[in-house]
Amino acid sequence: MNWLSKLIIIAVLSAAGCTNSISSNNGMVLCTGIAVPLHSRAPVKDSFVLVPKGQYQVGKAGFLLNPLRTVQVDSFFIAVFETTNSQFAAFVSATGYITDAERRQDALVFAPGLPEFRWMNDSTACWRYPNGISRGGIDHKMDHPVTCISYSDILAYCHWAAVRLPTLNEWEIACRAGTATDYFFGNSDTAINHYANIWHGRDHLAADSSDGYMYTSPVGSFAPNAWGLYDMYGNVFEFCSGRVSATESKTIAHARGGSWWCSSRSCHFFTSYDIGRVNIHASFSNQGFRVVKNYFL
Ligand SMILES: [Ca+2]
Image (cartoon, rainbow, N blue to C red; front, side, top):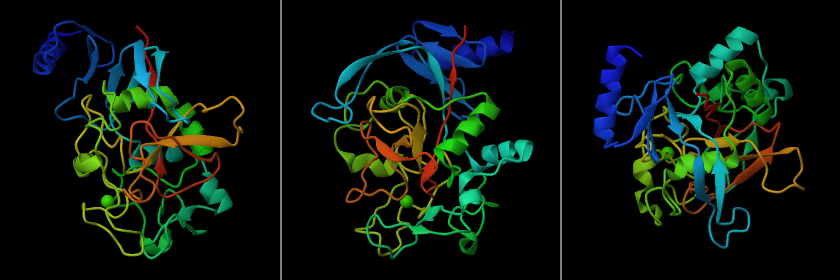
């Protein structure tokens, strides 16, 4: 580590109030008990936060799908932001990969006016045209999260990028950032507007852009959690690896955190404990992901 790196780390530690720390070999700093990115004030698009090995509380008392319990995890890095169109474009450019939605032409998209929980198939929709060709491409949305990709597509991306999806527990640990409440900012969702791009309309019959975005927003447009992770709630559902029961079908994948479509009256998956489910080949315009890396000393 050169002298400039040491100075930066000292500055970050000071700002974070660290008393005990170690530094890793890829630009992250670990304070005892909390994870801090080097870029905590102005994170770059490929920043990661180191979550230390340890025991963490996950789940919610009385919630059968995700009961309250203590779990053990190894240290891991988790991306500060959801994976963007720009990052996915680099993968496709390098590999020529064709997504499920492009092959199957079965992506499900949303337009204002649909009844609650109703989505429509648009054969033209794919990651390049996440709301269908008629509503434009991603030329000006390269910093938005990639959508209309399936769990199966994401596994291919992760293999190419030498990353992986977070497990269900890892995602929740990172989302909670040390909290035990339903949201990382408390037990009421009244502050959700500060942290998440969600749907604020009474229903989905009329358009809602009251928080600035009807569909996805550029990653990092809302406030982060205490560990500096953006869009853990809202913007797009984030796929995780693993299953909620040993008997669950292998065709089911799980996604967490809710999306731009979710509102307090519908969906309401923008919590720390909820777990969504979807077919591994299904593609929706509100489904995306963020990645993690293993931690090697
Ligand atoms: Ca919104």
